[in-house]
Image 1 (cartoon, rainbow, N blue to C red):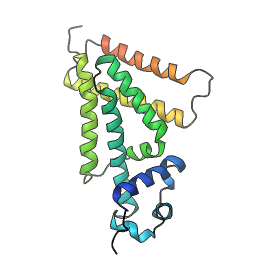
Image 2 (spheres, rainbow, N blue to C red):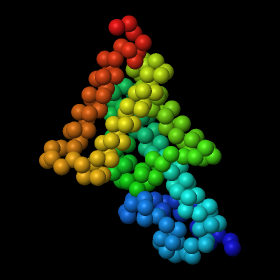
Image 3 (cartoon, rainbow, N blue to C red):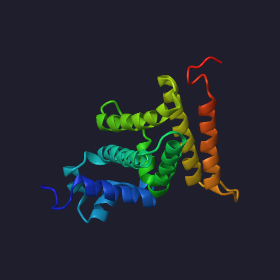
Length: 195
């Protein structure tokens, strides 16, 4: 069976991401996707290897979209400005694409080379931003892990309605990033300086 004219993997991924963002990642099934695309489910097998194949492609697609947004946010910026811009772009991405973001969090298998390539590009982008702080190589990795943990934690709590107090979330977010950066700026150990 030949693929439907106009139906390609990009259209499939965009449509699946739309389902994930509107109804949650668990709402993605081949039947739901086929219905939204106005095709029969077997037609999807011309493009993906079942639901697990679709999920793998969506994880890569989501990481690529996140990388694109973070790259755009970092262009022409350095230091604290770059970190704030990246952090804001990350949160904005999760707010706009919560289901797609969720799909990027699943640990890839050993054979998921496309996922690993994009994930490495993402780490390299973040590491390059932290080079402005003159961190040792290992310390830059710690900083990347730290910022990722903060951003994921914040967005996860926000998505689940974990912030119930009537205080401006964006102010809390900026203060969180400022506090993290103050620690990076003060850490002589991360910069390999004598204490």
